[in-house]
Amino acid sequence: MSKITEIELNLQHYSDAIDYSSLPILDEKDYQFRIKALLQLASSQGYTHLIIYGDREHYSNIHFLTGYDPRFEEALLILSHEKEPTIVVGNEGMDYSAIIPFQLQKVLFQSFSLVGQPRGQSKSLNEIFQVAGIQKKSKIGVIGWKYFSSIECSNPSQTIEIPFYIIQELSNLVGGENLQNASDLMTHPDYGLRISLDVRELIYHEIAGTKASQRVLQTIQNLQVGETEIEASRYLAIDGDPLSVHPNVNFGLENVLPGLKSPTYYKKLEVGEIITVGMGYRRALVARTGLYVRKKEEIPPAMEGIVENFYTPYFQALCNWYEALHIGVFGDEVFQTVKKSIGDFKAFGIGLNPGHLTHTEEWTNSIFFQGSTHRVKSGMALQCDIIAFPGEPYGGVHIEDGLFVADEATREIIRTQYPDSWKRIEHRRQIMKEILGIDIADEVMPTSDIQAMLFPYMGNTKIVLSKT
Figure 1 (tube, one colour):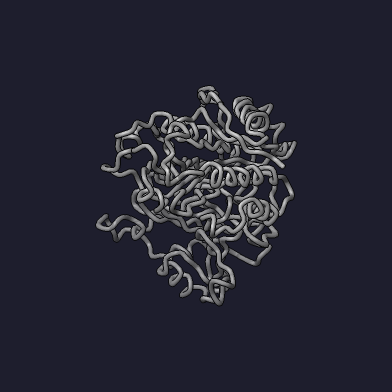
Figure 2: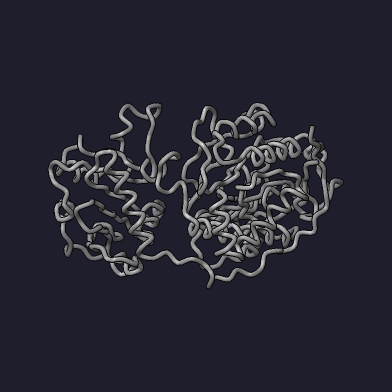
């Protein structure tokens, strides 16, 4: 039987400065390869064309296929075997689409532009679709951002979440019976194109995890009693890389329990209250929720036993999650090992999956649920994300970090071609195994500088929990 203890760890930024010049650059060959793979998958399911929708929130699929991420506007990417790819954008998207590193048809559809901007100089959607080769007998797979199951609706394959006016134009052209939700082609855990990522994508995950974890740790270490949430958020020192979520710096249960709240201008940090610090760049989110005290003696009487009764079983579940993770394991097996550690999820304050897949959006899908037959595969980018918010008296705890899974061949490519990332990964693995006592598999590649670290006293990051 393992034992959870407190140990001292002098946490400094052990990662070297990131050398951005050594990072991979995705080019025409990469995107053409992805489009070809997607079209082959689409053909196997009988589609003649794919319509991929994107907007500021739901950009990941178009971005993965082109490098273009819709910002102010909506966009469509139209793919088929017969025609050159077509991207349909609004006024501002026409200029921004110059970032796409390969030849494709760029078509202006001004109704995708912001309200009040110029109109009247673009073709109708019906005309755009026809020029792209869509005809009455075409079978269209529509890729938005989610697919549906039979417990949600009566006809999942024809339940499509993108804006109705687009679906209406397509239905008028090909008939509603020839439209199907094809979002599974991108994000289904077993065969989705964005589930098992290539090495270059994984390196971007490592960079994002490095940066996000350093900023979260820096913020926690610089917190000062009496400063407001918005004042404390400056320690995040966010650079120009796009974020996947709004940053969280929250003090007190009233601000922590909502879960997604931005820093306020008025709430000041006090000793003895629950706090959250979290932020995410695209491909990695790092978050910590816990009790802000500097030593055990500062724990409020109402929270007596929080370390022994709440943090200890939580950390054991966290360790079990990591130790259960290996190529080929079913999602249900990981789920069950967490449940075995803490018992009833609801009573412990867990309402969501204990972990999920991630990419340029924060949550791509999840394989970690009861009865899941989806297996962990090489190339999966994951978030260990066990949110436990039972409320009074202990409030909540949340340790979230990113990682990816890499088989031996993938690890060798990283080791030889991306030595900086490999050095950071190996250092994190060493800390997890030798200091935190978490026996992770060879294929588990941590991307966070504070991977799996639970600070029982958030005012003192030199103390962490460890399994012996």
